[in-house]
Image 1 (tube, rainbow, N blue to C red):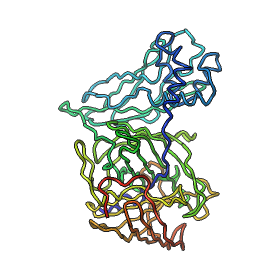
Image 2 (image 1 turned 135 degrees about the vertical axis):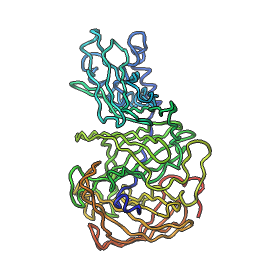
Image 3 (image 1 turned 120 degrees about the horizontal axis):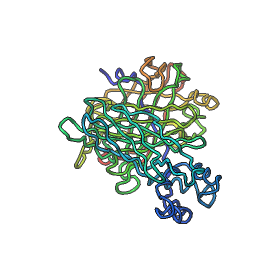
Image 4 (image 1 turned 60 degrees about the vertical axis):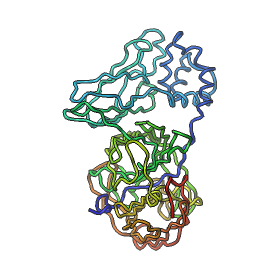
Length: 472
Protein backbone atom coordinates (compact mmCIF):
# COMPACT_ATOMS: atom_id res chain seq x y z
CA UNK A 1 0.00 0.00 0.00
CA UNK A 2 1.28 3.48 -0.77
CA UNK A 3 1.75 5.97 2.02
CA UNK A 4 -1.01 8.07 0.52
CA UNK A 5 -3.29 5.09 0.57
CA UNK A 6 -2.38 4.26 4.15
CA UNK A 7 -3.14 7.69 5.55
CA UNK A 8 -5.57 9.07 2.98
CA UNK A 9 -3.00 11.76 2.21
CA UNK A 10 -3.56 13.68 5.30
CA UNK A 11 -1.66 13.44 8.46
CA UNK A 12 1.05 15.72 9.23
CA UNK A 13 2.02 19.28 9.92
CA UNK A 14 4.60 21.54 11.40
CA UNK A 15 4.94 23.54 14.55
CA UNK A 16 6.56 26.94 14.43
CA UNK A 17 6.42 27.47 18.16
CA UNK A 18 9.42 27.24 20.36
CA UNK A 19 7.88 27.55 23.80
CA UNK A 20 10.11 29.44 26.23
CA UNK A 21 11.63 27.38 29.01
CA UNK A 22 10.19 27.90 32.47
CA UNK A 23 12.20 30.41 34.50
CA UNK A 24 12.86 27.81 37.16
CA UNK A 25 15.32 29.96 39.07
CA UNK A 26 12.71 32.67 39.66
CA UNK A 27 10.22 30.07 40.86
CA UNK A 28 12.82 28.47 43.15
CA UNK A 29 13.65 31.79 44.78
CA UNK A 30 10.03 32.81 45.22
CA UNK A 31 9.08 29.44 46.67
CA UNK A 32 11.96 29.64 49.13
CA UNK A 33 10.92 33.15 50.15
CA UNK A 34 7.14 32.78 50.22
CA UNK A 35 6.30 29.12 50.82
CA UNK A 36 9.06 27.00 52.31
CA UNK A 37 8.86 28.62 55.74
CA UNK A 38 5.48 26.93 56.19
CA UNK A 39 5.54 23.97 53.77
CA UNK A 40 8.73 22.51 55.17
CA UNK A 41 7.55 19.10 56.45
CA UNK A 42 7.60 20.57 59.96
CA UNK A 43 4.81 23.11 60.03
CA UNK A 44 2.97 21.63 57.06
CA UNK A 45 3.76 18.89 54.54
CA UNK A 46 5.79 20.16 51.62
CA UNK A 47 3.92 17.84 49.24
CA UNK A 48 0.67 19.78 49.72
CA UNK A 49 1.96 22.45 47.36
CA UNK A 50 1.95 20.12 44.35
CA UNK A 51 -1.81 20.55 44.06
CA UNK A 52 -1.00 24.05 42.76
CA UNK A 53 1.61 22.87 40.23
CA UNK A 54 0.92 24.73 37.02
CA UNK A 55 -2.23 26.38 38.36
CA UNK A 56 -1.74 29.60 40.32
CA UNK A 57 -5.53 29.85 40.78
CA UNK A 58 -5.29 27.20 43.50
CA UNK A 59 -2.86 29.41 45.43
CA UNK A 60 -5.24 32.32 44.95
CA UNK A 61 -8.17 30.23 46.16
CA UNK A 62 -6.29 29.32 49.35
CA UNK A 63 -5.33 32.96 49.81
CA UNK A 64 -8.96 33.97 49.52
CA UNK A 65 -9.70 31.77 52.53
CA UNK A 66 -7.09 33.44 54.66
CA UNK A 67 -3.97 31.34 54.12
CA UNK A 68 -1.47 31.02 51.31
CA UNK A 69 1.68 32.50 49.86
CA UNK A 70 2.37 36.23 50.04
CA UNK A 71 3.29 38.06 46.87
CA UNK A 72 1.60 39.07 43.66
CA UNK A 73 -0.33 36.98 41.15
CA UNK A 74 2.77 37.07 38.92
CA UNK A 75 4.78 35.64 41.83
CA UNK A 76 2.24 32.87 42.27
CA UNK A 77 2.33 32.07 38.56
CA UNK A 78 6.12 31.71 38.76
CA UNK A 79 5.79 29.48 41.82
CA UNK A 80 3.14 27.36 40.10
CA UNK A 81 5.35 27.00 37.00
CA UNK A 82 8.29 25.96 39.17
CA UNK A 83 6.17 23.38 41.00
CA UNK A 84 4.98 22.04 37.66
CA UNK A 85 8.59 21.42 36.62
CA UNK A 86 9.48 19.46 39.78
CA UNK A 87 6.26 17.69 40.79
CA UNK A 88 6.53 13.90 41.19
CA UNK A 89 5.25 11.85 38.27
CA UNK A 90 4.36 8.22 37.65
CA UNK A 91 6.84 7.29 34.93
CA UNK A 92 7.19 3.73 33.64
CA UNK A 93 6.08 2.20 36.94
CA UNK A 94 6.52 -1.60 36.66
CA UNK A 95 3.35 -3.71 36.65
CA UNK A 96 3.49 -7.54 36.79
CA UNK A 97 2.01 -9.43 33.86
CA UNK A 98 -1.65 -10.48 34.39
CA UNK A 99 -1.57 -9.01 37.90
CA UNK A 100 -4.68 -8.29 39.93
CA UNK A 101 -3.71 -4.71 40.72
CA UNK A 102 -0.57 -2.72 41.46
CA UNK A 103 -0.83 0.15 43.95
CA UNK A 104 1.37 3.09 43.01
CA UNK A 105 1.88 6.20 45.18
CA UNK A 106 0.40 9.27 43.54
CA UNK A 107 2.39 12.03 45.21
CA UNK A 108 1.47 15.01 43.07
CA UNK A 109 -2.12 15.39 44.31
CA UNK A 110 -3.14 15.30 47.95
CA UNK A 111 -6.74 15.22 49.17
CA UNK A 112 -6.64 15.94 52.87
CA UNK A 113 -8.96 14.03 55.20
CA UNK A 114 -7.89 15.93 58.31
CA UNK A 115 -10.17 18.35 60.08
CA UNK A 116 -7.23 20.72 60.55
CA UNK A 117 -7.70 23.53 58.04
CA UNK A 118 -10.68 21.67 56.58
CA UNK A 119 -12.07 24.98 55.36
CA UNK A 120 -8.99 25.39 53.18
CA UNK A 121 -9.49 22.13 51.27
CA UNK A 122 -9.70 22.94 47.56
CA UNK A 123 -9.27 19.48 45.98
CA UNK A 124 -11.81 16.85 47.00
CA UNK A 125 -11.53 14.05 44.46
CA UNK A 126 -9.25 12.53 41.80
CA UNK A 127 -10.69 11.60 38.42
CA UNK A 128 -9.48 10.17 35.11
CA UNK A 129 -9.44 12.55 32.15
CA UNK A 130 -8.43 10.08 29.43
CA UNK A 131 -8.33 6.40 30.41
CA UNK A 132 -5.57 3.86 29.83
CA UNK A 133 -6.01 1.48 26.92
CA UNK A 134 -4.43 -1.69 28.35
CA UNK A 135 -5.96 -1.74 31.81
CA UNK A 136 -8.05 0.10 34.41
CA UNK A 137 -7.25 2.56 37.19
CA UNK A 138 -8.86 3.36 40.54
CA UNK A 139 -7.74 6.07 42.96
CA UNK A 140 -7.22 6.09 46.71
CA UNK A 141 -7.15 9.39 48.55
CA UNK A 142 -8.19 11.30 51.68
CA UNK A 143 -5.94 9.14 53.86
CA UNK A 144 -4.90 11.94 56.20
CA UNK A 145 -3.35 15.38 56.34
CA UNK A 146 -0.56 15.56 53.80
CA UNK A 147 -0.48 11.83 53.03
CA UNK A 148 0.01 10.89 49.37
CA UNK A 149 -2.84 9.63 47.28
CA UNK A 150 -2.49 6.43 45.26
CA UNK A 151 -3.63 4.77 42.07
CA UNK A 152 -4.18 1.06 41.52
CA UNK A 153 -3.49 -0.07 37.98
CA UNK A 154 -4.92 -3.42 36.82
CA UNK A 155 -3.89 -4.66 33.37
CA UNK A 156 -6.29 -6.44 31.08
CA UNK A 157 -5.44 -10.14 30.62
CA UNK A 158 -2.56 -10.85 28.29
CA UNK A 159 -1.36 -7.26 28.04
CA UNK A 160 2.28 -6.13 28.10
CA UNK A 161 4.22 -2.99 27.22
CA UNK A 162 3.66 0.68 28.00
CA UNK A 163 0.31 2.20 28.90
CA UNK A 164 -0.56 5.77 29.85
CA UNK A 165 -3.50 7.87 31.01
CA UNK A 166 -4.26 11.34 32.37
CA UNK A 167 -5.95 12.42 35.59
CA UNK A 168 -6.57 15.48 37.73
CA UNK A 169 -7.71 16.53 41.17
CA UNK A 170 -11.08 18.30 41.20
CA UNK A 171 -13.00 20.48 43.61
CA UNK A 172 -16.05 22.70 43.59
CA UNK A 173 -13.96 25.82 42.89
CA UNK A 174 -10.68 24.74 41.32
CA UNK A 175 -9.03 21.73 39.75
CA UNK A 176 -5.39 20.78 39.35
CA UNK A 177 -3.72 20.76 35.98
CA UNK A 178 -4.09 17.55 34.02
CA UNK A 179 -1.37 15.08 34.96
CA UNK A 180 -0.05 12.10 32.97
CA UNK A 181 1.16 8.69 34.11
CA UNK A 182 2.76 5.71 32.39
CA UNK A 183 3.22 2.13 33.50
CA UNK A 184 5.31 -0.66 32.00
CA UNK A 185 3.44 -3.97 32.00
CA UNK A 186 5.81 -6.92 32.10
CA UNK A 187 5.91 -9.52 29.38
CA UNK A 188 4.81 -13.08 30.19
CA UNK A 189 8.45 -13.98 30.94
CA UNK A 190 8.74 -11.11 33.44
CA UNK A 191 10.90 -8.84 31.29
CA UNK A 192 10.01 -5.18 30.80
CA UNK A 193 9.90 -3.12 27.62
CA UNK A 194 13.00 -0.94 27.23
CA UNK A 195 11.90 2.35 25.71
CA UNK A 196 14.33 4.26 23.49
CA UNK A 197 15.90 7.49 24.69
CA UNK A 198 13.57 10.11 23.22
CA UNK A 199 16.40 12.65 22.94
CA UNK A 200 17.38 11.51 19.41
CA UNK A 201 16.55 12.74 15.93
CA UNK A 202 15.75 9.19 14.80
CA UNK A 203 12.24 9.43 16.28
CA UNK A 204 11.50 12.26 13.86
CA UNK A 205 8.94 11.31 11.23
CA UNK A 206 5.36 10.44 10.44
CA UNK A 207 3.17 8.69 13.01
CA UNK A 208 -0.49 7.70 12.90
CA UNK A 209 -3.17 5.30 14.15
CA UNK A 210 -4.28 2.96 11.34
CA UNK A 211 -7.85 2.92 12.66
CA UNK A 212 -8.12 6.67 12.03
CA UNK A 213 -6.17 6.78 8.77
CA UNK A 214 -6.36 10.22 7.22
CA UNK A 215 -5.17 12.11 10.29
CA UNK A 216 -2.12 11.83 12.49
CA UNK A 217 1.12 13.42 13.60
CA UNK A 218 4.51 14.57 12.46
CA UNK A 219 7.25 14.52 15.09
CA UNK A 220 10.59 16.28 15.09
CA UNK A 221 13.07 15.77 17.91
CA UNK A 222 15.80 18.38 18.32
CA UNK A 223 18.39 16.48 20.39
CA UNK A 224 20.25 18.49 23.04
CA UNK A 225 18.76 21.75 21.73
CA UNK A 226 18.82 23.33 25.18
CA UNK A 227 22.09 21.76 26.32
CA UNK A 228 23.50 18.30 26.95
CA UNK A 229 20.67 15.92 27.78
CA UNK A 230 17.99 18.58 27.17
CA UNK A 231 16.28 18.13 23.84
CA UNK A 232 13.07 19.63 22.49
CA UNK A 233 10.22 18.31 20.36
CA UNK A 234 7.78 19.82 17.90
CA UNK A 235 4.74 17.72 17.06
CA UNK A 236 2.11 18.59 14.46
CA UNK A 237 -1.39 17.15 14.52
CA UNK A 238 -3.43 17.18 11.33
CA UNK A 239 -7.02 16.31 12.06
CA UNK A 240 -10.60 17.55 11.78
CA UNK A 241 -13.41 19.25 13.65
CA UNK A 242 -15.65 17.20 15.94
CA UNK A 243 -18.20 16.89 13.16
CA UNK A 244 -17.63 15.99 9.54
CA UNK A 245 -17.44 18.81 7.02
CA UNK A 246 -15.68 20.14 3.97
CA UNK A 247 -12.47 22.12 3.78
CA UNK A 248 -13.68 24.35 6.62
CA UNK A 249 -13.74 21.24 8.84
CA UNK A 250 -9.99 20.74 8.67
CA UNK A 251 -8.13 21.40 11.94
CA UNK A 252 -4.44 21.45 12.83
CA UNK A 253 -2.66 21.85 16.13
CA UNK A 254 0.97 22.04 17.16
CA UNK A 255 2.47 20.53 20.30
CA UNK A 256 5.84 21.21 21.89
CA UNK A 257 7.84 20.44 25.01
CA UNK A 258 11.16 19.52 26.57
CA UNK A 259 12.83 16.13 25.92
CA UNK A 260 15.13 15.23 28.83
CA UNK A 261 17.50 12.36 28.09
CA UNK A 262 16.13 9.09 29.43
CA UNK A 263 12.61 10.46 29.85
CA UNK A 264 9.71 8.16 29.02
CA UNK A 265 6.92 10.73 29.37
CA UNK A 266 7.20 13.84 27.20
CA UNK A 267 4.91 16.53 28.60
CA UNK A 268 3.63 18.73 25.77
CA UNK A 269 1.46 21.81 25.42
CA UNK A 270 -1.13 21.88 22.62
CA UNK A 271 -1.36 25.13 20.62
CA UNK A 272 -3.87 26.44 18.10
CA UNK A 273 -3.12 29.05 15.41
CA UNK A 274 -5.89 31.02 13.70
CA UNK A 275 -6.21 34.32 11.86
CA UNK A 276 -3.90 33.75 8.88
CA UNK A 277 -4.20 33.81 5.11
CA UNK A 278 -2.77 31.37 2.57
CA UNK A 279 0.96 32.08 2.04
CA UNK A 280 0.51 35.66 3.23
CA UNK A 281 0.39 37.74 6.37
CA UNK A 282 -0.47 38.36 9.04
CA UNK A 283 1.96 36.33 11.14
CA UNK A 284 -0.01 34.20 13.61
CA UNK A 285 0.87 33.06 17.11
CA UNK A 286 -0.20 29.88 18.88
CA UNK A 287 -2.56 29.95 21.84
CA UNK A 288 -2.34 27.15 24.40
CA UNK A 289 -5.50 25.01 24.28
CA UNK A 290 -4.50 21.79 26.03
CA UNK A 291 -1.88 19.39 27.27
CA UNK A 292 -0.58 16.05 26.04
CA UNK A 293 1.84 13.29 26.92
CA UNK A 294 3.86 11.49 24.26
CA UNK A 295 5.43 8.09 25.00
CA UNK A 296 7.58 6.01 22.65
CA UNK A 297 7.46 2.28 23.40
CA UNK A 298 10.14 1.58 20.78
CA UNK A 299 11.38 3.07 17.49
CA UNK A 300 8.15 2.19 15.65
CA UNK A 301 5.30 2.50 18.16
CA UNK A 302 4.12 4.90 20.83
CA UNK A 303 1.11 6.60 22.34
CA UNK A 304 -0.21 10.15 22.70
CA UNK A 305 -2.62 11.05 25.48
CA UNK A 306 -4.31 14.44 25.09
CA UNK A 307 -6.70 16.69 26.99
CA UNK A 308 -8.01 20.01 25.71
CA UNK A 309 -8.44 22.85 28.19
CA UNK A 310 -10.43 25.10 25.84
CA UNK A 311 -13.79 24.22 27.38
CA UNK A 312 -14.61 21.45 24.91
CA UNK A 313 -13.61 18.63 27.27
CA UNK A 314 -12.02 16.68 24.42
CA UNK A 315 -9.61 14.04 25.71
CA UNK A 316 -8.33 10.67 24.61
CA UNK A 317 -5.44 8.32 24.01
CA UNK A 318 -4.12 7.56 20.52
CA UNK A 319 -1.85 4.55 19.87
CA UNK A 320 0.80 5.53 17.33
CA UNK A 321 2.60 3.55 14.64
CA UNK A 322 5.49 4.86 12.58
CA UNK A 323 4.24 5.27 9.03
CA UNK A 324 7.54 4.79 7.21
CA UNK A 325 10.59 2.61 7.74
CA UNK A 326 12.80 3.49 10.70
CA UNK A 327 16.11 4.89 9.47
CA UNK A 328 18.22 6.20 12.37
CA UNK A 329 16.37 5.52 15.63
CA UNK A 330 18.12 3.15 18.05
CA UNK A 331 17.01 1.55 21.30
CA UNK A 332 20.49 1.90 22.77
CA UNK A 333 23.99 2.84 21.74
CA UNK A 334 25.28 5.24 19.06
CA UNK A 335 22.76 6.23 16.40
CA UNK A 336 23.60 6.09 12.68
CA UNK A 337 23.14 9.14 10.48
CA UNK A 338 21.56 9.57 7.06
CA UNK A 339 22.25 12.53 4.77
CA UNK A 340 18.81 12.08 3.21
CA UNK A 341 16.72 11.50 6.34
CA UNK A 342 18.44 14.46 8.03
CA UNK A 343 16.52 16.75 5.66
CA UNK A 344 13.38 15.69 7.55
CA UNK A 345 11.89 18.30 9.86
CA UNK A 346 10.14 21.65 10.09
CA UNK A 347 10.55 24.31 7.39
CA UNK A 348 8.91 27.72 6.96
CA UNK A 349 9.08 31.21 5.48
CA UNK A 350 9.85 33.60 8.37
CA UNK A 351 7.73 36.27 6.71
CA UNK A 352 4.62 34.08 7.20
CA UNK A 353 5.50 32.52 10.53
CA UNK A 354 2.58 30.57 11.89
CA UNK A 355 2.29 28.41 8.77
CA UNK A 356 4.80 26.13 7.10
CA UNK A 357 5.82 22.61 6.14
CA UNK A 358 6.93 19.41 7.79
CA UNK A 359 8.96 17.14 5.54
CA UNK A 360 9.96 13.50 5.83
CA UNK A 361 12.67 12.41 3.40
CA UNK A 362 12.81 8.61 3.59
CA UNK A 363 14.56 6.84 0.69
CA UNK A 364 14.44 3.57 2.65
CA UNK A 365 10.67 3.66 2.02
CA UNK A 366 11.21 5.31 -1.39
CA UNK A 367 9.10 8.30 -0.41
CA UNK A 368 9.21 12.00 0.29
CA UNK A 369 6.21 13.13 2.27
CA UNK A 370 5.37 16.73 3.12
CA UNK A 371 2.59 18.26 5.16
CA UNK A 372 1.69 21.89 4.67
CA UNK A 373 -0.32 23.69 7.26
CA UNK A 374 -1.73 27.02 6.25
CA UNK A 375 -5.02 28.90 5.87
CA UNK A 376 -7.70 29.65 3.30
CA UNK A 377 -6.83 32.59 0.99
CA UNK A 378 -9.17 34.77 3.06
CA UNK A 379 -8.98 32.78 6.27
CA UNK A 380 -8.00 35.57 8.66
CA UNK A 381 -11.57 36.35 9.70
CA UNK A 382 -12.81 32.75 9.82
CA UNK A 383 -11.21 31.59 13.09
CA UNK A 384 -10.70 27.80 13.11
CA UNK A 385 -12.76 27.40 9.95
CA UNK A 386 -10.02 29.33 8.14
CA UNK A 387 -7.39 26.66 8.80
CA UNK A 388 -6.27 24.53 5.84
CA UNK A 389 -3.77 21.72 5.42
CA UNK A 390 -2.40 19.87 2.45
CA UNK A 391 -0.08 16.94 1.94
CA UNK A 392 2.37 16.10 -0.80
CA UNK A 393 3.96 12.82 -1.81
CA UNK A 394 6.45 11.54 -4.35
CA UNK A 395 8.93 8.69 -4.82
CA UNK A 396 12.38 9.57 -3.48
CA UNK A 397 15.61 7.90 -4.45
CA UNK A 398 18.70 8.17 -2.28
CA UNK A 399 20.54 11.41 -2.96
CA UNK A 400 17.60 13.16 -4.66
CA UNK A 401 17.41 16.88 -3.83
CA UNK A 402 14.76 18.10 -6.32
CA UNK A 403 11.49 16.18 -6.15
CA UNK A 404 8.17 16.79 -7.88
CA UNK A 405 5.10 16.08 -5.71
CA UNK A 406 1.36 15.81 -6.05
CA UNK A 407 -0.59 17.93 -3.56
CA UNK A 408 -3.68 16.52 -1.84
CA UNK A 409 -6.53 17.91 0.26
CA UNK A 410 -8.26 15.62 2.76
CA UNK A 411 -11.74 16.35 4.14
CA UNK A 412 -14.73 14.69 5.77
CA UNK A 413 -13.14 13.18 8.89
CA UNK A 414 -13.76 13.72 12.60
CA UNK A 415 -11.12 14.35 15.27
CA UNK A 416 -9.72 11.07 16.63
CA UNK A 417 -12.56 9.03 15.14
CA UNK A 418 -12.54 6.12 12.70
CA UNK A 419 -15.84 7.08 11.06
CA UNK A 420 -16.75 8.74 8.88
CA UNK A 421 -13.62 8.03 6.88
CA UNK A 422 -12.08 11.10 5.20
CA UNK A 423 -11.50 11.39 1.46
CA UNK A 424 -8.50 12.81 -0.40
CA UNK A 425 -8.31 14.43 -3.83
CA UNK A 426 -5.43 15.80 -5.88
CA UNK A 427 -5.60 19.60 -5.80
CA UNK A 428 -2.29 20.58 -7.40
CA UNK A 429 1.37 19.91 -8.02
CA UNK A 430 4.63 21.16 -6.57
CA UNK A 431 8.39 20.88 -6.71
CA UNK A 432 10.52 20.76 -3.56
CA UNK A 433 14.18 21.62 -4.03
CA UNK A 434 16.84 21.62 -1.30
CA UNK A 435 19.63 24.13 -1.79
CA UNK A 436 21.33 23.21 1.49
CA UNK A 437 20.56 21.57 4.83
CA UNK A 438 18.91 24.80 5.99
CA UNK A 439 17.46 26.32 2.79
CA UNK A 440 14.91 25.00 0.29
CA UNK A 441 12.16 26.16 -2.07
CA UNK A 442 8.65 24.90 -2.73
CA UNK A 443 7.11 25.81 -6.08
CA UNK A 444 3.37 25.10 -6.17
CA UNK A 445 0.36 25.31 -8.47
CA UNK A 446 -3.18 24.60 -7.23
CA UNK A 447 -5.87 23.56 -9.71
CA UNK A 448 -8.64 22.58 -7.26
CA UNK A 449 -9.84 23.24 -3.71
CA UNK A 450 -9.76 26.33 -1.51
CA UNK A 451 -6.52 27.60 -3.06
CA UNK A 452 -7.46 26.87 -6.68
CA UNK A 453 -5.57 29.16 -9.06
CA UNK A 454 -2.83 29.96 -6.55
CA UNK A 455 0.76 29.43 -7.68
CA UNK A 456 4.14 30.65 -6.58
CA UNK A 457 7.46 29.80 -4.96
CA UNK A 458 8.14 29.82 -1.22
CA UNK A 459 11.69 30.27 0.08
CA UNK A 460 11.94 27.94 3.07
CA UNK A 461 14.27 28.10 6.05
CA UNK A 462 14.80 25.21 8.40
CA UNK A 463 13.52 25.61 11.95
CA UNK A 464 16.32 24.73 14.32
CA UNK A 465 19.76 23.32 13.53
CA UNK A 466 20.41 20.74 10.84
CA UNK A 467 20.64 17.21 12.30
CA UNK A 468 23.93 15.37 12.44
CA UNK A 469 24.91 13.82 9.12
CA UNK A 470 22.96 16.22 6.91
CA UNK A 471 24.77 16.77 3.62
CA UNK A 472 24.02 17.73 0.05
